[in-house]
Length: 101
Image (cartoon, rainbow, N blue to C red; front, top):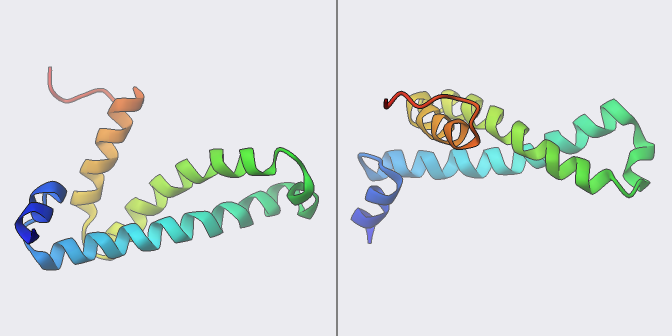
């Protein structure tokens, strides 16, 4: 089971896998909190009662998550690992050209 997880996440050892899980956990939780405070900062408290609040929040969480993933991953010494994930996402979205030609 351990070897399968190492292979799926493309990490070298269980220590790196643990760090990856911690970074994903912190980033997910933090992106939800930061997204909420960012919306309230920009639009004010009145937005919370607006019907578009949850739509805007969901749209905002994705880019916030991507940025925080790189920042938190770097703080844990895993910039290269999370940058590779980020490049794959940006290529799939068409925002970055593939280096494979």
